[in-house]
Length: 230
Image 1 (cartoon, rainbow, N blue to C red):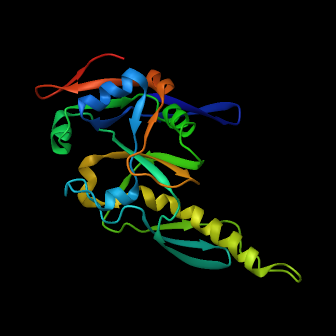
Image 2: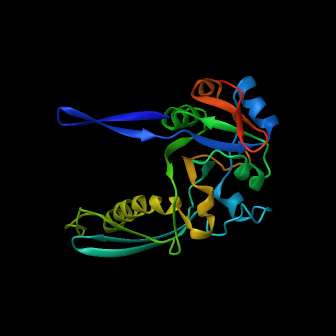
């Protein structure tokens, strides 16, 4: 695990970042520790995953109710920006590995530094987010924008004003990509999302050798995880 320090006046507040596990076939774990090879995925793939256990038809579909001091809006739609996703879990167990059909895992000991190093290898990186997923029967979210909507002034481009307002509203909807239906709660998912400005590729493989120092391999044996060392 790692800690993120945030200054609260003259004192620090430490935000705990748990180590999370990306369940993989051992051949892919070995490839990562050999030269940093890492395979990413996308929301589009999650929606059509051939394994029913892993398939979620609502992945990347955002529904967010957003209110400001003088307006209310509803953002709905599919994540239209190119993005790559890596899913991990806060649970490290052979039972979960068996459910995913995997025999090994990549333990990410420092999620924030790992995300930063991957971002530097993603073509056209345009921002991202990481964190634990929430689980609920209602996958929509509610958010508040403290900044009121200001109508176009005389001589101001109305379409540009509305475009900026729409972009701000949509920025609040990113939280919807971390909300999953309650039936997936056993996954205890922690996910990483890297948005890009380039064309999306299926299962892009990148090499992130520097990220290896923030990870450790795990092989799942008889009922427990066997730590193979960093």
